[in-house]
Image 1 (tube, rainbow, N blue to C red):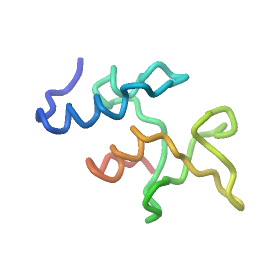
Image 2 (image 1 turned 45 degrees about the vertical axis):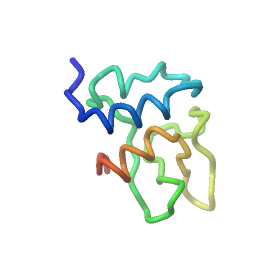
Image 3 (image 1 turned 180 degrees about the vertical axis):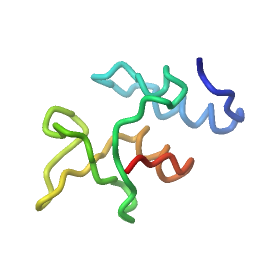
Image 4 (image 1 turned 90 degrees about the horizontal axis):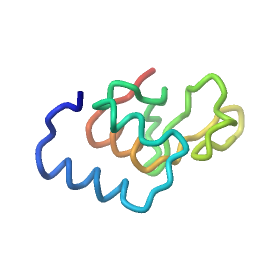
Length: 87
């Protein structure tokens, strides 16, 4: 069941989702943000560090040095604006 979000946040999330193709069918959104990919904010504005076990399998993840970065707009919004970061 989806958590009740303030209207402004819900509209922003819907704006991000609109036109975005998610290979995971927006499971994070549909689960009320209970099922999030593992990622953490590392202080880079447009990226998170991907902490998934197989980051190479995600279309939003790419290698950067010894780590993988996440560029999923929805996951970044959640981590940076809503402070939903799983470590």
